[in-house]
Image (tube, rainbow, N blue to C red; front, side, top):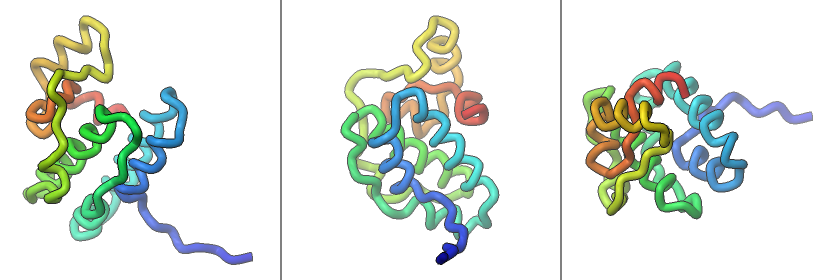
Length: 128
């Protein structure tokens, strides 16, 4: 039996998982990615964001990944990867679409998400 060494999830791998998992599992995958990302040293965290994810088959999630990569890079005082620049929505998307969540997102969406049209409150990323 071959045992592989632990490798933290990359944003490209997260994209693959979002493309193949059920809708209700997506936030679990995002949560796992965020947890792994959080525990890595800074140079590794930046490397986890470098490779462009293939399409998930849903433009909203493709743009979400770009916003997430830029947001996480900014937390390390870095620019997002170049691949992020081309991904934007032309109509706002509220992943959590209740009246309260919409208000919270409008007021508290992180800049990387807001500028791409993904309206998501900062605390949604912390609880994902």
